[in-house]
Image (cartoon, rainbow, N blue to C red; front, side):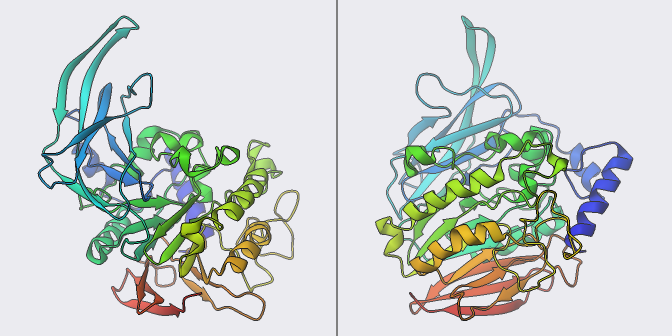
Length: 441
């Protein structure tokens, strides 16, 4: 199924049912799964490790009642040395009846930590009337390893999952098999999310067979255009935390989705291409501000590439949702004002992002970036470097595991004998579709 037909069919089916399309209507086992999803305990999900970094990590999980959550972590597998970190920052802890978000800081680079999660059920009757009714600590002990120049140089990329549970189940199983240091979720995890319940269903409680898909393998996140759409997605940080404030300059305070992370011999650079339609498109009523956001990321990128741990990496790999190159002259480059339509182009939305390419790729190329991994078109593609463009582009596959053309992919990157080897796994067949090798810069 191509990208446009996927969006149309999902929207039409949802409109006919009178509901918001947050899942694929073809997932016929959804109602049966919902019956087993009635919350009975205070904590009703495994933890999700977010924002892989050298000295910090974010732990997120779902709760069913007003609670303050916490994480106990340490260097010993039995947690006999455990320290406890509560959700929220200074002054007051966070009370939340949906999602607990805990940020752990002060960690050692390239170090394995062990942890478990817990929460306090809270009765709140006002500013002078609150008490803890019970404290719950789950027995399961998980682990994670922080980033850093001594970490294992091994990542995986998934994209355009669009809440296709069968596909996400297969992707998570492949990732568990490959066991990378981290996973980059390269956008369009969502469709159009209006409620935090639907966001939790996607990121924290997905309908897959593997419990705790991100409990031991940390994730990085590059949003896609669909991850901006819907009232709930305007506050995506409710389920996917912003990055550590200390990781960016005060000028870049709002750029909580960008990342520049050193992982062994690889520097991972995350960029947000934002919407696939112009801010001036009447469809969005002037309520989007993508252009200024892209320009702000340019200055962030300029600074990030000069950081010692990034500039010294033998390999630089960039990630963004919408491709930054397309050789087809009929493919809309995303800057057709004012409303994205022109008879010269086959689509009325961006197939690739010329504005972002003009802003970011000169900086990436000068820094020695050899490959940019993108998504969005629901079809695997490889664009080799040419005379002026020194970087290759790898585009991930689509959300439908039954599709022959747009099959889902896990893009795996690892360093062997000093070279970056990228394997593209076809999840529909289980075979490696392609392997691309890049020399150190």
